[in-house]
Image (cartoon, rainbow, N blue to C red):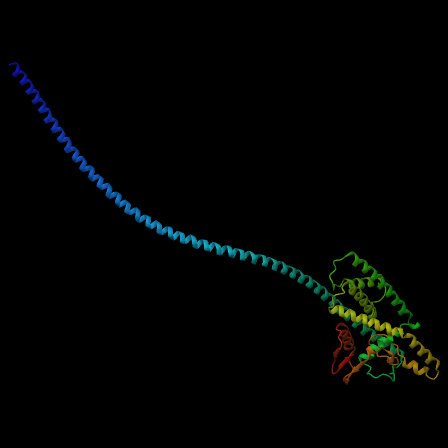
Length: 388
């Protein structure tokens, strides 16, 4: 009984264990099925993730290839831009060189412009000087015309006929007669009968001397004078008008002496320039030297005059032949012609048939002084004059 009881209890225990095992097996099976379903779901998810990764990798590779292409393009662009930068740098260097050359040229052009302005101012001053000389020549012309009228009136009132010397080879209205008459005037200035003219010319020479001193002082004080300006001649004329305010206007010789003095000072100031006014001044100086040479022959003419005055038979004839030359328009005696300088010998190529007016004679003389040449030709009404 005891054994049966113990076997019965062990059977119950075994059955209980069997039931527990069955339940545990059922729970494990359910858990395994659950795990299987979960594993399947996880595998599906994993497959989906793998597919997504593959797709993303494919897209990434496509993007990488496109980025690589863009990088290659950017690299090419960078190399091209580098070349352009190098070219632009070379152009910048060239432009800088050109800018430097242009700056130098600009400076040179500015210097040329300054020189051109200076030359323009100088030419303007020379033009003013020539205009003033032209006005002076016109005044000389009017003065000479008035003097001719006065001399004609005197000759008519005196009733002394003018005669020609047998040695005269040119017409009385020729330029040779004018120049020889001028020389006769210069030679006759030393005659004691012309005391008034000597006093006047002495006063003129003193005035010119004072003017020269003032001009030298002014030139020493101011060093910015433009060459060719008209300051010297204007100062000479103004000083002459101030010093001789009570007298009449200066005649032709006085103005020529003033022009010679101003020309000598201007030649000292500008020794290197030879323009038209300078040539005129040199010509005036040459004429002054010729005048001095003719004045040096005064003794010879005085001796001739005394010798002829000692001859009673020829005294009346000599007094008629010796005509006093009072202006450059006079056509006086020809007795002293062989003793004048050779430079004043004039040859007519063709004589004209009618006499020249006094205005044409003076105009030709002044034109020859203002335009000195080796061979000067004066166009008249119907003749040419050749100076040599």
